[in-house]
Image 1 (tube, rainbow, N blue to C red):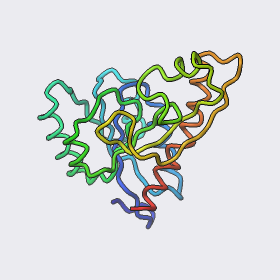
Image 2: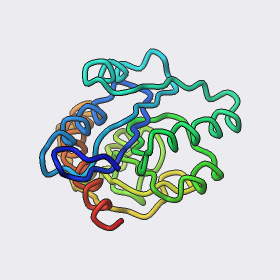
Image 3: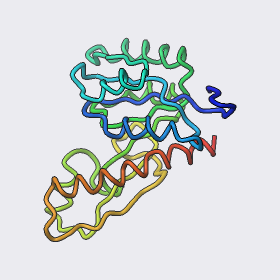
Image 4: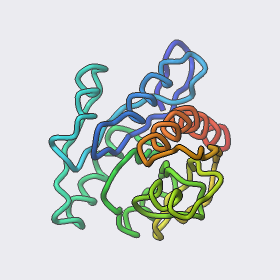
Length: 194
């Protein structure tokens, strides 16, 4: 927990693998005076992740982690998170699966954002599968992470109507707008419940 302008804020680490648009959005949301969180650490399994530029831009500590020796890496990562006083982890386009032991040790405070209305369309290629199945709606879900892929308790969801002319790209762009609105809202909601 950190105090900023007299307001207690929960320390959050964001795990990324790619361009980091949800990371950037969370950083900007954290600067909102009503926000209950602060992005204190960025972790990436990809040294070329474009999202790492936000660490420099917003002066946030970053760490690049090679997940080949998962057990040892996760043990060190848990120590780093403890040192930085991290209360919550947000996965934002993080393309590695955390072990059951890591999830358990971090005590259920790991969130993920997924571009579908879970429990439908877990895993990858969600927009393509949604369109091929001629669904009328898609959307996004913020959920707790457990040991099963995209199966943790749902925190918040947002529906997006699928248009006849939608392509994977156009649907993904519209869902991403909703992800940016939903993730900080879900994070503030669970902090209220802590």
